[in-house]
Image (cartoon, rainbow, N blue to C red; front, top):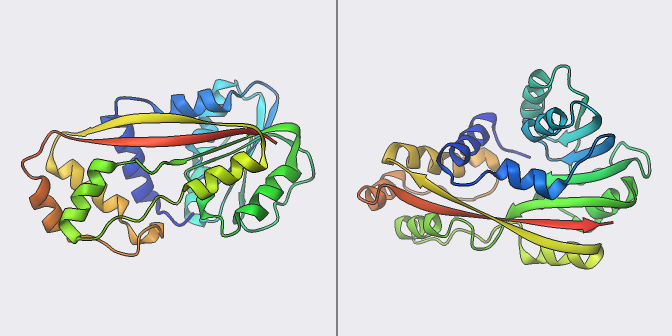
Length: 244
């Protein structure tokens, strides 16, 4: 992942503080972890969800967490002292430095679409999972943040590109795995004022995320939404849950 610590933290904090639903709870239900599991997190960022899993299982699990951003990994290591989590600097398109059939669960939260070769990445996931192991991949669906996209379109005349977690990826995962399904999570983010909304907008378009190839005119964005507060944006997230 290319995202900076500051932009990632800003967006996650906004989702938690101003949302109507808990993504962490949705993730937990989809993962359905249990004691004694070996778990692989691809694109772990700061390692927040890994620590939540360990805490929920009273440390009765082993987690390997990977990311290619050293800054995020360094923070994850600092924040995870004493946790049974091993952090590795690994890209999605590299061979995983793990043995065959050693993981019970592999998951990726808002990161899998950074893989340049989805087929290769899935082949590596299948290699490290035990027979009948579980894969869960989370990402934004096409209807995600519709209200936000409309504001950006008005400000720039540019349609925000389709989410990287496209039907091409979700359909491929479903076809390539066994007993696959998609679950949907919706979270209404209600921004109380212009300052909060603009902070979120700048974090979304942080060039270091590597997601967008443009930035809007922030003054125009502010003018469009200035009289719309409280302003609500709907987060729509999908989880592909599959047996491999």
